[in-house]
Length: 196
Length: 213
Length: 179
Image (tube, rainbow over all chains, first blue to last red; front, side, top):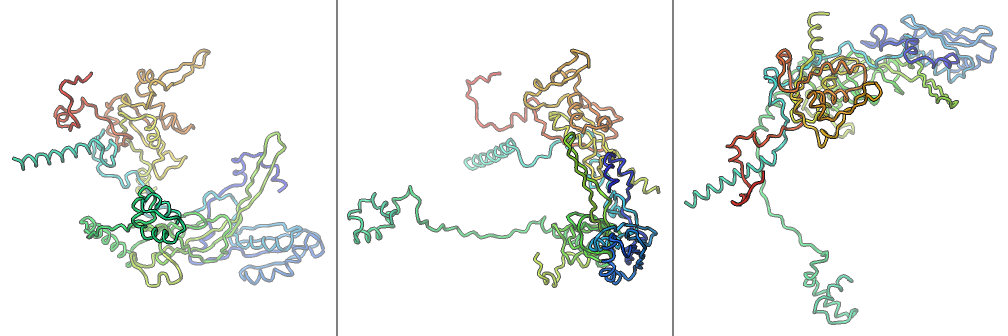
């Protein structure tokens, strides 16, 4: 993190080039049919005497047995080494590896980092460009400009008055007036015929 | 009572001193007559309005019958496909983690943020807004019935995102803040999108588990 | 790419040509509508990096209708870059010089201000009257609806129509209709 402190001078473009990016993927079509846990081996390295390994020693004493029981598919190695800071190293089915320093971390934090390593697929952490991937982008067929179009537009002669004019909702006052006039005429002609 | 007295003052029938028992009695008797004088004031009593009795008759529209036929025809066609398993690959629009996603079997969908399910868990996405095949699409208003569509997914990966840097500075103000954050990312594999029964069919089990539609 | 996929690509990204009749239309409101077509935002496949705009052919730009006092009040500013090179042209003056310019400038100013603007403007074809070259006419595949109904003037009605039109009242016989 100390290194990162100087990095914000990079433009976002350089930043993303530096870190790389990818689309979502899983190794070997995992999850189709059945799910296979990707974490294969995990090595806990620590020192038996140094204070920096205190949290790791606590973890191994109290929590590691639960982790091993819950994940029978994971091989757990515990590797004491003198006067070196503790770390976790995870190896995955697709050949990926991850190493995290556990120097001076309490046992609670190590529980969380173990859970993190357990859930990963082994691909390096990159920026994800899209949150979805599909091999079947369209089921009803891709859109085209002719989809759901009135077929008469294909045979119409342009410029076309009917396709150009505004679609009127309801009648205008003039039309209303004409209608009334027509009715009135009918009534008066009827009256006249009755009178005569 | 005060309002009654006020009414009385205008009438010539008022003779006695207020407080006299006989006068009060007289007021009570004359009340209905006095009310009529009170046309300019809000009357304390309104006679019930008598509505004329109307005989109503439901007229069947010819176009309505035609529409019903058309609807039935379409439903039959869709049901035929569902029953004979001819829908082909189905897609669905599911609502989860605050977003709408268009999914089809074997898709990968990533959820960012806190998402409790753990790796290897099978979950069912219940808020289905729309489901469709090559020849038809069913829309919910807004959701389709939970018994109708079955969308299942497996949690394939739980990871943290890349380290995002939130950097803020004000020029010449000695004001700089840098924050680093890694969000939780959960990757789901969609296993199946299935239509479980015919449409337009109300099942007996519906509503049994306390749901109200 | 297989033949079917190739045709699919052509179909999805095919450029359409639309006609727009600007007769008696407000050019500034029309520009909002034309803008959608030439930048492609009316399509579901729209994406800012996706060049999917359509062509729009505007006819009758000579007969546009500006709202209110706009013919006299709207001013177009231009500066040659030299001292004293500023000039202000009223809308009616500009329209007399070139009857397509009011529409063109209206659309140009409504488009997003970026490097794609000139390219989008190249897809806009404006004609002062309803005479359009045949090479363009045969491309047309649709027409954009006008925003407002074109009013019909009294001299466009036939005498018969005028006679048969209902009268609300009769003028007194000695009444002189002022012209």
